[in-house]
Image (cartoon, rainbow, N blue to C red; front, top):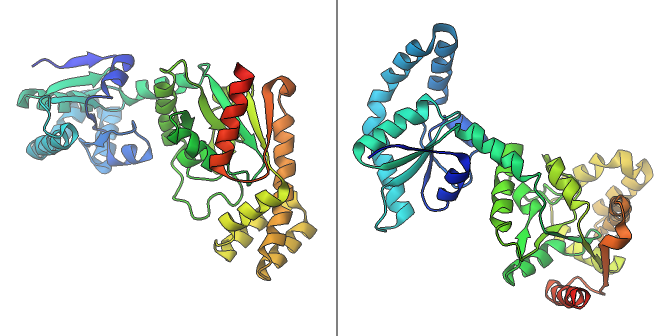
Length: 356
């Protein structure tokens, strides 16, 4: 079989059907990778460092000699690993010999592994330009114009649950907060898994946008977020696009939202809640910070969260109106309760009437 070299566009299309083998070092893969790819490192992190140093200081041929000295013992285990990956990926299907291989720049590492797998009998495709080409493709996705529908509402409006209901109903949804593993506020990391790296977040987001954009007749629902979600930042070109898209604003009474917040956050660790309140002390103000913490320590959760909710309402109000031509973009839906099923029905009904 011959090894086929693909540009990034063709590589992305085949990645939906064939396993992607990332032959970069474990550390490179851990930092960020193509979503769904399998780690098949040619070198360990230390071996990569040694080979890279030799390449810079002694030239390509010496680097290859050093690399080959550690490559030999890995040949059979690497083939066995790829066989195992393909058996699981294809689940006994007829085509179980095609694989996509890439390294950082489409250089020696992917060429070496591709040669080995081709020799054994796999149908091998490599990525011209490697992971670096993929990252350029990722960044390009954020400059495209998407058919976005923004879901707005003050804190505690149940926007995440409403997006879940829309997704269950077959709508296209991108959950920024789920992808970022953070709920957006100073309290957003409590009880959540560690956030991905910025690069990994971007990779996952680009893939999601790319898949969603193929369905031109369907809008993509996203939550009205600030640009920063914990340590993650929404890419600026995409964020600027979001700020000029239609907004459906859920208007829910303060008390109903407060009750929802108490249920959602009231069971969390008090020490972590206090630490989160202290993080916004400069903006909340010393007096309000002390009152919120004291109420919390006295188990008056509603009074504590009431102070915080009023603060976040002001923040969101400012961000909401920091748009050009908001009046033309916004559709307000009045609803008395935080009920995702009832509110998604109301939302759908309102938009159907508006679009008729």
